[in-house]
Image (cartoon, rainbow, N blue to C red; front, side):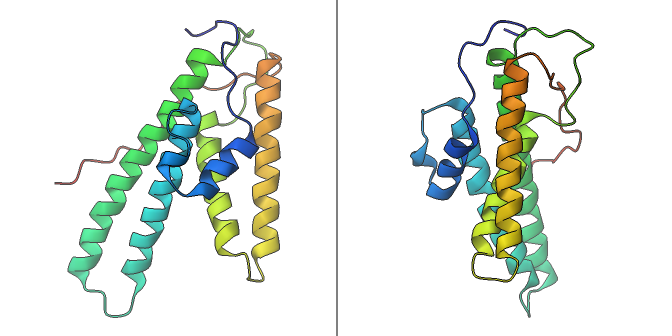
Length: 173
């Protein structure tokens, strides 16, 4: 319930990165609700990047792009649901009572996990490229900021917004 004492801690960034790297939903199944949603986010981002890459191939027809766009919208709808699932869990299980004057963080934990998934996938994709070190640094800084935020929230030094992603994705038929 919102405002209750911490019951179960959210996973740290190392656990999130392990799930992302595993590349399989089964790697976290049932381990922790946030890890499960993180694994689904990683799988969805991989599928979305694939669909986007197919759109860019030479000779791709507008019909093929349209089909891929519908798939991307479906994946984004699932992405939003997973971000919201993380945020719901955090609000229900890992947010201690906090005074209104405590500084508000600028984004939800679910949004941060989503960005961490993207940063890790980008770092792995760029591993041998000139951009690899920059991508790894971004991922590592974001992971550290995630852990710091969780510590601040746990100590009631930072409060989280209870926001929902406003863009809606219609189910494609």
